[in-house]
Length: 181
Image (cartoon, rainbow, N blue to C red; front, side, top):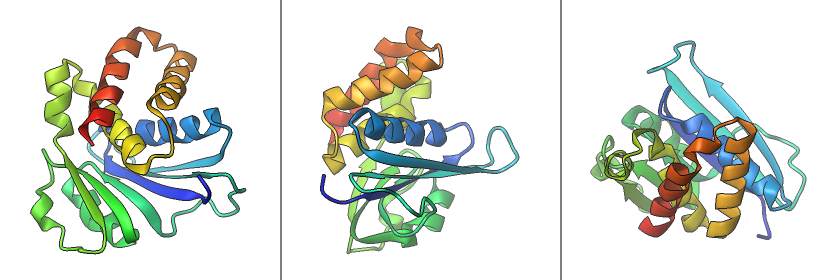
């Protein structure tokens, strides 16, 4: 990795976008990179808007706020509509195709990856794992982390939170996303 990256994670409260962003920021730290994680969310616990900006790379990050994203993860249609204009030309938009029809994307200057992550999480028996699947997709699509680096960083985060009992399910979800691309 030679330049810093900016990723916007966006969706509704309860979809795990803040957690997915935190995982990416921690993966970067685990790899020895600089990283920032700036969450923004509405007052509702579930169903309100939620997004975060993650920046990481080899250089110091002097401005952690949203600028022009290299990657957008959109878990729902309102998030796609709001944040897709912020993606740089030649950037990547990854969307939850269970909730966002990929045909609404009219941009031809980006790479679009449509992932049925809600269905995939259900198939894994891990309904709360759609965000972890998407983290795996981002890891593979960007090429900034190996699968092992991503797994180690993710598991470290959940161990700190006392949620190691979900390690097998979360690892399966991350691998499913990694294998999707």
